Length: 326
Image 1: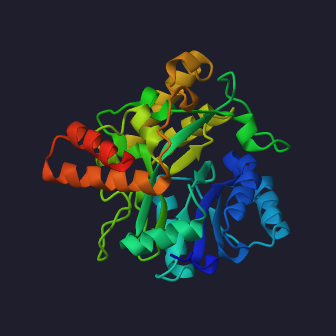
Image 2 (image 1 turned 45 degrees about the horizontal axis):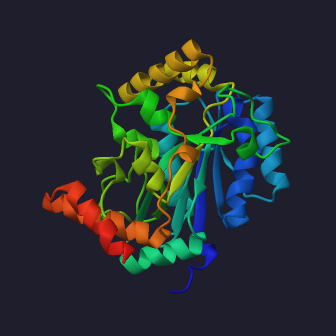
């Protein structure tokens, strides 16, 4: 199976320049290193102040990296408006038969193989959507610290854990679907608000794991999440996190799910002064089965089939493990 030409891989994102500018250089470095071509980087810059110094800085940064001119959105941020603009940008600039890496500026994707190889595998399976799980990135002592422009962001936030499921859990208005992100999708699909799954449309969604990841019964458990080989490293837990969230919570148009979940996070970090590491499952504390990524994908697809038939998931999972180990 030959890898897909990198000319068919595009990146689409939106950056709030007044709250997220510090992430931007690291974000660009990460996705260019993953193999996204410079001409295929499609960005929206958002601020509610047309004279914002960070808007000028962001434009200059993109120009210095020889990236395409961004779309500029002047107005208050809401999730609905942002995702609508991202869908419009994707439709305008990305051919329907190409592939889109969809990432917020604080989301750094980890793929288990080069993007061209992943896409070739998806096309061989007839898949058009790859989801991943959030892996929260935390400073070594759990404090909420600034993004350091002179240090790799992965060193500043060296710990990998599961804050989102542990602190956020589920609620009246939000569920496990919010802990999953679309990482890669064929441009014939468009991401929904939040980017947790594609919009309903004329094109059927064919997931890599044969069902939405949030529909696996164990998705709220850290050990299961750490087993999944597609990960979205979430550099959310920074010094400005609480202030940014409070600002968004106060903006008209915030969703009920976003408001409920956001308040839980703000209340927790303000009460604890950061992340209390004793509360959080860390990836280093869990032994991950040393299966290759293709075998893990195969296991999860077989598990999805078993769940669709209504079989006992634990029994099937045990049998699948036995089968793949031989």
